[in-house]
Image (cartoon, rainbow, N blue to C red; front, top):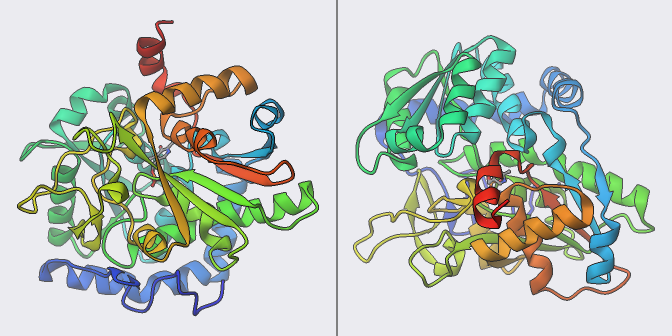
Length: 397
Ligand SMILES: *Cc1c(COP(=O)(O)O)cnc(C)c1O
């Protein structure tokens, strides 16, 4: 990746007119400290060696790039699935948490804090903390704690302390506030582990670098499997945008590769029950970063809705906002219904039950046109075990 890429963050963490670090003054020292060291740590041989070894032997990488033959027949093209669902813990999130834990360790931090909505990032964080023997505190809205009992139990079994956020709507944004308050109070020993390409600089860039292993592998694998060394399309779902950012990373400056991001539109973009941030297109500041977000007339962040917990986020990472702005990536959206249909189709054509999040990316196949000889890579961000209750209810199994 060339340093001058117009799609990467500049020194201030700006992607075009998006990004930056809009944070309370009390957080400056923590953010400045992280900003100073993160690139040096990631690029160091010691980090790279340990990170690569854990990705291989603990996470189970490289994840396969699988040519889905029956799905390809149906769409008259070549559909390859990047199998992040086969990672340890069943999704791409572990690439990031293992990486950030190692960065925390290099910084001499003893205590990890995180916030979680549905609990998937909390579980991935608690997993990495157990692996490294670090103290783990996960903030979670009181409402989400009740809704996501199995993930709360997983975190506890992994040794994490789950703290309830009891203010506001008692969901993700309230948990975020609590985590930030904790970090302000404990700047010395505590590392704040963010789960997607969101938050103040340097988080979006740091998380993208850690997820970039996805596109690094795709590039190699596609050249082994086809006569070209690039795919024609890379398609991924976007909540905050980390699996998409990792899937796009090494292709950003190769404009032959068409990048497609799929948001969750819930009951429909204009239904009021949606998480299609880009489609709604309002700009503002969320989680310390200037980007597109969902807000009311008077600028209050509104509750998003999607059937898939991982896409149920009212913002989007600043790099994606910039990729939309510049036209480098195409943004589509899929409704709950379209995602459910796509999940069932993949299951019955390929014997793979996808996460509901990933099913949104699969739904893009019905919205696009491909040539017979093209290579279409879809990132299967996670497996569907966690969504079985929803599938049972919606399909009546
Ligand atoms: C959390 C999650 C997502 C959404 O997060 P991104 O940061 O947008 O990748 C997508 N898929 C799965 C399986 C998830 O767990």
